[in-house]
Length: 268
Length: 193
Image (cartoon, rainbow over all chains, first blue to last red; front, side, top):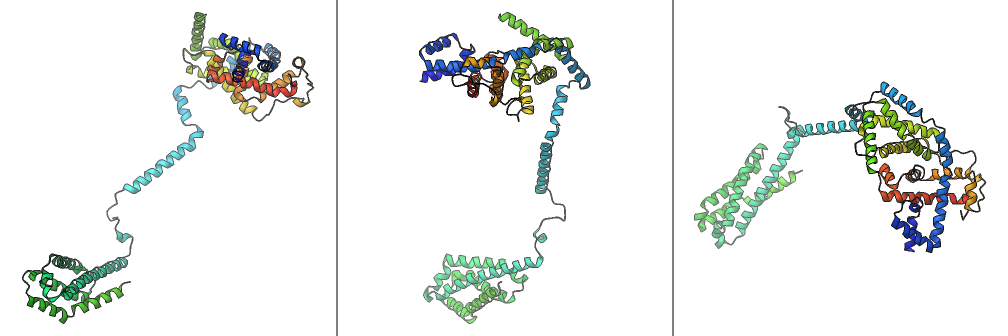
């Protein structure tokens, strides 16, 4: 069966004498033994013979053409056309094909792309002219920025007060006999130093927004921590008690608490 | 034999060189040598004399315009027939692609072909009409290969060169063309035919 399949693919080539001698011998010996393939060959031969039916027609038509006159007729047409439209050089043909109308949309697209690209590059990399500096003032009203700054100052102050409160509370709640150790410890002095630094940072804001009450309390706290950090090395039990008394007397913790509440309530 | 072929090729190349320079005599000689081959290809393809004559004229006009592109060492006949083949296909797509079959006075189904055997069919004067219609139904490439092989009597190798495809493809498409023709003709030729 496989053999028949192979043979049948060669039947047309066999009919047209396109098989090599070896293939031809192989095919004819197969046809002698296989009636199916032989009958397939005959069926194909009918189609080929059908094609022959057109041959007389072709010969007749070919005979009707004046072959002697035709070259001259064609030459007349060709050379007449050349006189009217001379043959173009390869360069002319190339430039003409480059600018043919059907390519116009392509060029228009490319040009548009280049323009958009150039414009985008210009917008991204352009150097602003003097007086055209792109600051935030251009985009936000002054009063809005001031409100933001005020809000930030409040938060900073609150943060400062909170940390101070915790430190003072830690001190107050510490057992009396260990209070000296508390102030001498590295951790406490670091917290106090941080609060002193923070106070320096919020000072200008407190002045700017005229938060006088808050500033007064913060100043007291600052002074308090400053004194403590300065003398912590030589603190005596009496001095500790004095500090304790001062905190109580000035009601520092209460003031902090009230100020915090006030600042929280005034937040938007 | 080989020497003769080479000399012939050299002569053709000399002629084409002269055509490039605009030599009318050389152009007429080339036309005279190859006009019948081009006509045969076009006529077998279209089965119409006017279409075939148009193709012949266009082919030689293109030859004159594109002579500069012909390179020495290439087969001139294959190159020229390649031009003709391209023109045939373009012309067919432009003028015949919407037709399902050639115009005919009597529809193929109404032809009197009660063929009982193949011999009877051969004798029928309508056979060429039947065959012409069946040939027209073949796919472009199959038809072109069949025509080149059957009427122009080109070798498979030459067809492969002209159509710029492999030898195996030519062989396979030719086989399919004949098989399809047989299938298309069978309703009109009887079972055995």
